[in-house]
Length: 334
Image (cartoon, rainbow, N blue to C red; front, side, top):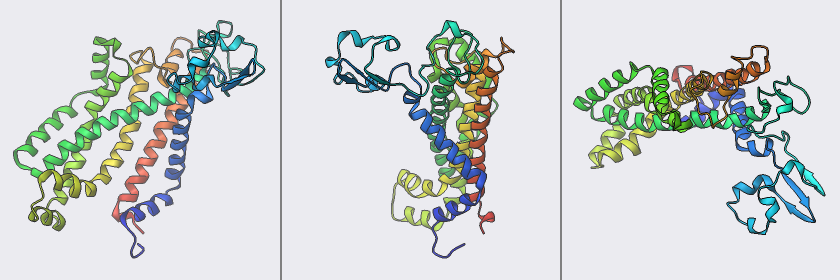
């Protein structure tokens, strides 16, 4: 340990030493970039085009919330962009949306034009893979965001106050941990099939908080009797201020680690649900693409590409989580 280094600097230095975790972190950043620019990478509208001397940016039309759309000719408001006469045009790398249908290219194996093949009704697999990154990341981040909020609050108050409140929270955690999350989601989705992907995110979040609460409680039990906490109490600070301003920042590290593992678990859960046909019918995901392979075993590309994406994504999140865990373990500091 270098004298004068902060805890954050020590953790960063230890994390950088873990090459698989660093590579995985860059891969996660790459997935975020693909999700962020999915509409630019894959779309059935041109990125930019020139028609009758006027320059248009059709891909960005939906993001501008009708600003400037009044200047567009009526025939371009709902135009078939594939069959217009352009003076110049720039198409996305993948000129399809996940919902674009090409009945002449049903179950085509990978080939130029459809680089990862097509499904049973001619939808481009590569386009679905690109837009499916948004679903994967949204499920992981939003569901774990819900779990972190609930887990932090319950774990913090249970660890700080102890006593009866701690006993009640522990019993609730034990009850929640006996509930089979996967089958609970299947049951709820079966009763409310119109809930969509948001319902799946909420259920995953509402059933994933016990792990966060346990780690938070354990850290609060360890920290609450330290000198800086006793000093804050002696100065008359309120309990919420002491908890969230003084104790929580020093107890958040283990929560970050378990959250990374939780994101990987949420992505895997959503993929499994979509594979079994319980996902959102209106949202493309890697699991929904993979499910097509169940009825068409000869279409190997429908299984290989989304299956590989799920495997790689879950693996790199787990590697980052392990890297953070090792970097935050004081016994491994050198």
